[in-house]
Image (tube, rainbow, N blue to C red):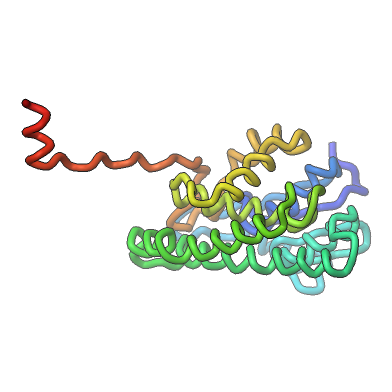
Length: 249
């Protein structure tokens, strides 16, 4: 049973923009109330569960996600994540590290916003998602790959997790699910994501509740249902006349 003193994190019943903060709370073993709001069914996808409470929570800027932490009431995903980062000393050890953490949070948010445009707004989803995976995503992945190489640490900033790690992992994972590629060109990213998934504080959650929750709302063209990464099968090269002749001689 939830304690009345527990923090409340409110968001849609999806991973979306609140999951980095959920991951941080689970990692720090912080009891919290995971307040979930559900969309109605198609074609309207009504938001009555949220709308009937929206203006009664005492939020200065009512929106999802929101965090009620004692007498502090916040909205905006980045604000919530960095508040929790400061609270649990996950915002770096000095001003330089803090600035890099904020940079990584903003940079990964740019990537997630571009993915949002594909999943929610694309008219021709197949064409737009292919262009995203072939052209846009590699630019972002190379930037993160190069950053990890330059840093040379286990995590983004050092040998300990920071608030940025929870968001960068989560948003890369959203793209990993959409791309269904093996990302062989990005070995640092792959090693980073594997290490994150094996964190003892998060492994059980990642394999259970996290894996069962969609990354997007049910109105999205992708990710409205829980999906897993499935690598595309490599197409075998077509046989040429010469290869067919050699095979029969």
